[in-house]
Length: 109
Image 1 (cartoon, rainbow, N blue to C red):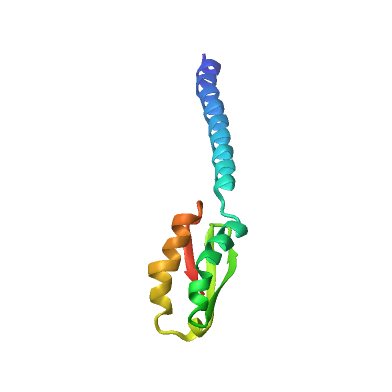
Image 2: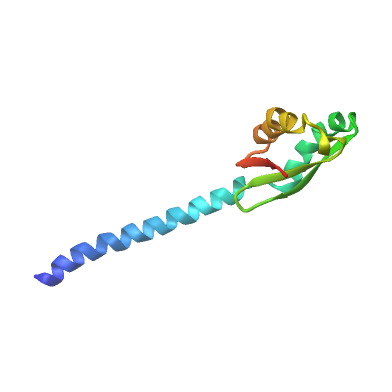
């Protein structure tokens, strides 16, 4: 009688655990599909680069980390501009987040 009770507990756990493993693998595969590529982010930056260069500055893509956070830096005149943080947060950051699927955040370094 005790063997039956134990199997009643083990069998559902086994199938539940197996289902959870499959679901975790599906989520991981889906995240990899939505992970932004360097080319996608660079393409978005290239759209706004001419406007930044008009003022003697530039913007560089530094990289993308494992959490899909994009890191950028201003160069030239924009690097020391007091308006750089405002331009970044109200324009560049929002543009990258809107246009590149999978980006979780954009950080100015």
